[in-house]
Image 1 (cartoon, rainbow, N blue to C red):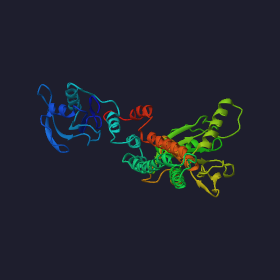
Image 2: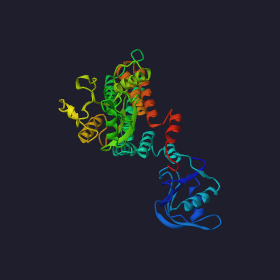
Image 3: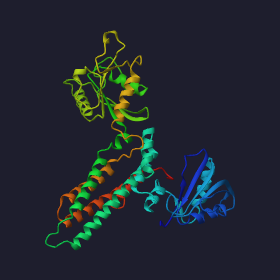
Length: 426
């Protein structure tokens, strides 16, 4: 248990209708009693007068008491649901700060204590951080699944099976013929089966495109209407538009949500041969962006489109008489009249959703996938080996990878960075 007791405002910044101030740690109940007198029974709410050390009335608040370890932090915890004015919050915080053994919480410290006390594992903490930062409905749903323990539940099953395999391998070391040391074929098969299960999970859509936005790159020759299209899709004039070819010399990125799907929409310099140095750098950068694009929106001639797995051909400036006739497989669009913009948006969303996890599906982030891949590789080694000692060691390495995945070992630097993402009072 932590040696000190922390407090902080855990709701939004005042003024607000209600402000929630949390106190967590060994002195939480003592501190709350100093302010309100008698506390209600655990997990019961009661109205109490909050008074400072000089017995001055601070506020009338709803008080909830939680006894550790059955609390969100795993410690004794009290919540004051006060009126949400700035002066009220400041007075309650000042009263708590005057009590010996209490201090203001650091950002993310409540959640860090929940992790340290085993109330959540690292995957749930990561899901909670993503939930706090979620800006689209897709991000919110995916983060909520992880924050509520969806991945943790799956990991628990894997770890239970792995522990049984390890126990069998360790036991076999004591009983196999010392000259042979052969592994049990059934044990090898089960190691291989678990490795296949992990491999299938590693092939699922990842969390990064959902968290950071699907990279949608608009590309084509100079003066094809790329910047106008970016402005039209984003809803405001983000890129400079002129009749002069080569106006865009560097890429411009705009984050937005289309039908609840997070998008990073990028306008690029026109793709063409040029001897001008600055333009040349912009064109080269544009080509690199095209290569790494999740979805490519092409505004040039259809036959000139780069080879891309998620390519959307656009027949731009379709409102102009000279642009009559839409090539097959292209979306006719006018950034001036709005023609075809709904159809293009729908096509982008459809292509983006193909690389995003479906609703309610657990998505691994890069760190989680790396740990899972390490465990898979160790299991593959265990399945291939006929030496029971090597099998046992490979299984130990797989268990260590799972410990890194859940945060039980070797993640101190990561923890500091993760909980630093949380706001004060969370």
